[in-house]
Amino acid sequence: MKFEAPRGTHDILPSEQPRWRHVLREFERLCELYGYRRIDTPVFEDTELFARTSGHGSDVVTKEMYTFEDRGERSLTLRAEATAPIVRAYLEHGLHREPQPQKLYTYETIYRYGRPQKGRYREHWQLDVEAIGSEDPALDAEVIQLYDTLLARVGVTEYRLELNSIGDAECRPAYLERLQPWLEEHASDLDEATREQAARNPLRALDNIAAKPPAVQEVLRQAPTIGDSLCDACREHFAEVRRYLDAYGVRHEVVPTLVRGLDYYTRTTWEFVGPEGGSQSTLSGGGRYDGLAEELGGAHTPGVGFGAGIERLLLALEEAGVEPPAQEGIDVFFICEEGADRTAVLAKIAELRAAGVRAETDYAGRSAKGQRTQAGRLGAKRVIDVRSETDLSDVTA
RNA sequence: GUGGCCGUAGCUCAGCUGGUAGAGCCCCGGGUUGUGGUCCCGGCUGUCGCGGGUUCGAGUCCCGUCGGCCACCCCA
Image (cartoon, rainbow, N blue to C red; front, side):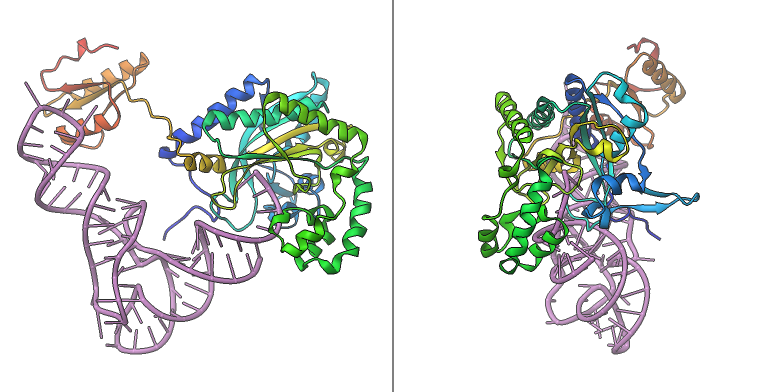
């Protein structure tokens, strides 16, 4: 009998921890620096929370959720996405009564059922930042700049930022009313896949044009774009976001066809795309979600935030040839030779540890040489040979 | 979810046209060397992913299954 980690999951071994901790520490440091506070939500939520906000027609909801029924016949779903649970917590605990905006962050596991690949897991980790309770475009720019800074700090230099505005309740419906008929009119010029996308979500039909057949690309380029259809408020909001990003020196390109997979997004949407190693190059994705809280039954509460895959960031780091931070060695290692008083050694170790000294000895019955090797592996700053006559009393911190 | 490639010791891999499994690294021991480094010697570990089938005989062929990877879908 042999057990393996379930498909699409992975262990994070001790040898990998230094890299993980490095990224996590930089992330936390930045979040605190920018005034974001940590929040944690449950691994599972009411299924409807995700279904309502992500959209009943979205890929996440239709084919990627880990949904199960508990013994009380409640339909629950493993955290499929970070934002909805946080907004739920915001509403549930009345965070709208605290000073706005509420600037929150977390890192946690996310669950999506799908075919695993490198950088694509059924259980993966995400960094997440949300600013809830303000529609100030400065916040859009702030969270984007925060992640941009994180990339710089950990050493990822090869990436680009794609930016778009997909409008709001004011202008998007009108745009869709123009796009939908247009797509139907040109249906005969489109390929099967695009027609299916158009039927499910018209915006989606324009997504990732570069991957479509050349002839189809030609046609789609003539389609009305959301950018040309934005209402004044959205247009101005987007212009300000870009102005702030320019002021921050955050390079970005406007991609008019960038759509995101979750229905709750409004106005600003963006993706950080990393080095083209595999196809799993999206490092982070986010956007504004001014209608999300209302969708959950709360008052109108604008918000903006992003999720960023940690495994993918680590992959990009490796690709960039960034070395993991060196582990600091222990302070002292006791080598027990023949006849050594091991009890006294253990007592001394406990005493040193109490004083904050990292002390170790051998627990594997190694030879003296083997113990010396082990001490070296642990990076011991001091190595003490203990023989029968050794007096440990003069070993101090 | 669709299509394709792959699956041999903890790790990286070898194993020709089917004949009953190997190397390096790692780990442990010994020696050398004034040290944890080097070099030398020795040792440990595998139901050849799993289950069936073909065959006198399968790691090597066939089917299924599980898992990894690649493309698509979509995304983090």
